[in-house]
Image (cartoon, rainbow, N blue to C red; front, side, top):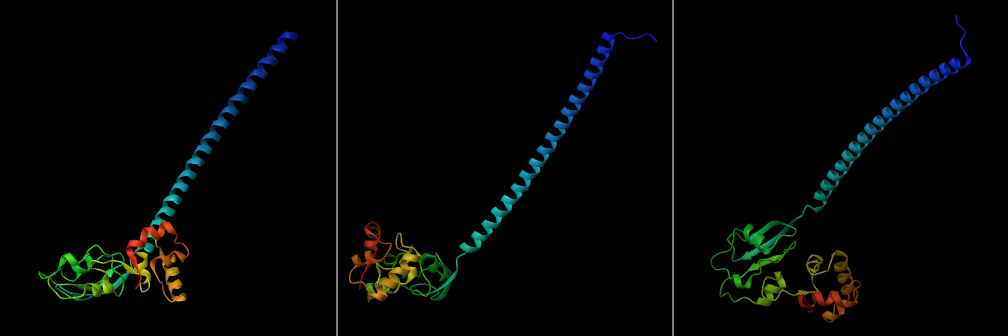
Length: 214
């Protein structure tokens, strides 16, 4: 066998090393590609799982809100110029108009000019629908159900439900109003309501035309 020269041996070694280097590089490239694909798949699965969790949580929240916001039943007594007077069942947030409809509607004798059909009703309320020409004291109607001309709320006798109907008055402030009047034996005038925590001059200006003291 012919003896290889030193240069030929070096050349062969270089070729062999080149082949090895190329194979290693190709193998490394393929492994990196595989890892990238696997990471991409894992990321996609994670996103899908997160999306399902978000949708599930969102649905759960919506269902919970629906349960919380479901209006409660209330009972009111409606009489006067309606076709079916008596105690009827309504929902919180219903108005005088809903009560009239539930009672079969107005009779031909109903004095609609003395009725505020847009007024909210509250539990245990007495609703009087006056007839045309009926000699009934408007103030009596106002005190019983506020459907007459004067719709101001008497802050010395109003229930929590009535107080909440005032602009800017929520449940917590309405409870403070009731607590204040019980502690101080009622309000002497409407301005005194500003002594209740949470009712400043700005809020008072919002409600002053809707309240009274008797």
